[in-house]
Image (cartoon, rainbow, N blue to C red; front, side, top):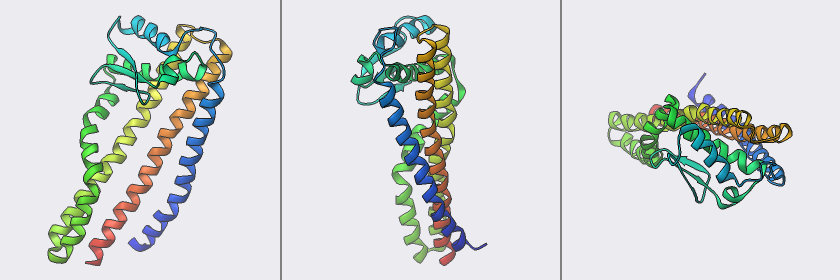
Length: 236
């Protein structure tokens, strides 16, 4: 099968990949909106819930919790950042989201290896994402003057693009594990009633699907990018 035919297949594969991403994101938003309407019986804001969890699991004051622009855990600063909406809310969705970030803090405290690998390659991935198209454009330009130099640059661009896919490949199990830890702690410390726990589980599972969708999209994009680079190399 020729590279041209494979490239056409890659373009076609992007359609179901885009649909999968769109459905996953829509499902997450609708699920979070649904369970944001239901306050938890624990009657504590999300930041206080995870503060109690982290104090019990890894010790008082080991992880800072603050308000920010997005919900995430920063392993370098040992802090959980929550949006104001999540930070102050007592809803099932907000506590579920906060517990997920607490799951990341627990991964860090327990030395979870996939998380450490993701953290180690993150700067390289950031570099690759910023310069992949620079190498690609330079490579295609150099093919005219020097086939060997141009091909090398294009292969480098493929390698940089592959790093992003590798990052997503590592990120998906890391995110799934954080949700698994969150649910385990919710059960252990009886944060939710049985009905609430089902809702929190739906929120966490739907969120995990967005990372799977990102991985699938990245794999399709990598396939297309490799074929595009090979098309230029073959043409010259």
